[in-house]
Length: 174
Image 1 (spheres, one colour):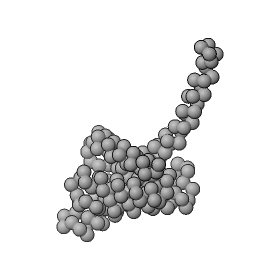
Image 2 (cartoon, one colour):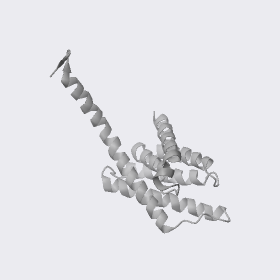
Image 3 (cartoon, helix red, strand yellow):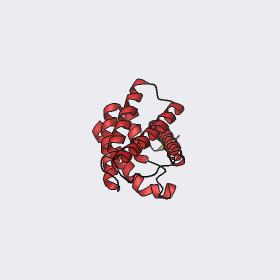
Image 4 (tube, rainbow, N blue to C red):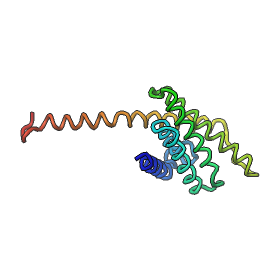
């Protein structure tokens, strides 16, 4: 079930990233929804799911982009593993710790990809501090909101079912 969950979450994040990102930040790459999905899966399912999701998501993003294939895969794999390790070692159930994990994961992923490009590519992409800070804040906010929605969803469904059962009984409205 975890593998299916990883595949579906990564696929949904890739679809959202490729279709909505240009509208969110006008195509400048200020949000990485795939990284948010990798960190979420790592935090909720552990380091193995973090490694799996990071590898799949990173390689898929690399294959869709124009950079060196494998750089994003390696960076997201490391980030997914560390997010999973943090999720199993520390209590990351409140908003501020989750925000800090998403923020730090973005900083780490940008640092790893920038460092690898610097080592492998004679013309590495230029990354500004403001862009990294903006992406880190955006990813952290989206990650926290996504966690809030996912945490609230089962309760909303249960309340909806209870309300529908309580209102209609044998054709009569109570």
